[in-house]
Length: 188
Image 1 (cartoon, rainbow, N blue to C red):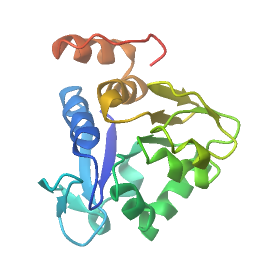
Image 2 (cartoon, one colour):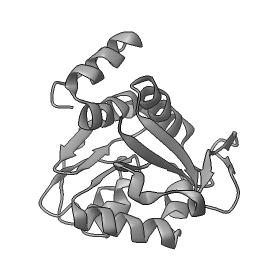
Image 3 (cartoon, helix red, strand yellow):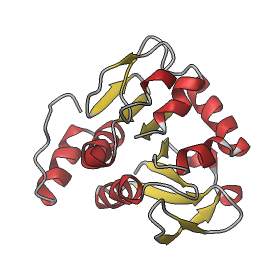
Image 4 (spheres, one colour):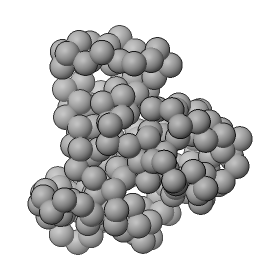
């Protein structure tokens, strides 16, 4: 079984986060929700409170196969302000370990230089932050150990791409069928 952590900051986009949580848990992935503050309660961009499984200080990063960043504003900015998370993203990237981001959150990867020479996608208007990337505007882009996705409307495709990366294409197809979702492309 794979393990992954999804990071919640005040102002996160709830559908981008919780769709991924739901799909990954259905697939048997040990997905942990992590608050980037000292409090488990995190409020979404549309004022919905969510209780995370852990705070960032409680997470065993070494036990994670992937780190996942939902978008939303000011959620993305608040993720970016978390020094612990930013340091761990650098470590994962340098080691070629899996990282995923959706909506505005790929800008974090772009600003760090992770996307140079790779295909990537993000929320429209954020492309300027994808330094050195080929910004495609696609629903999901998988490039080496990085997955990026466009936004709330692509959360299902994003979650299924994560499942495919961690558990294989057959498992992703099984979960898509289970939730009666027709995938729009074969490349995720």
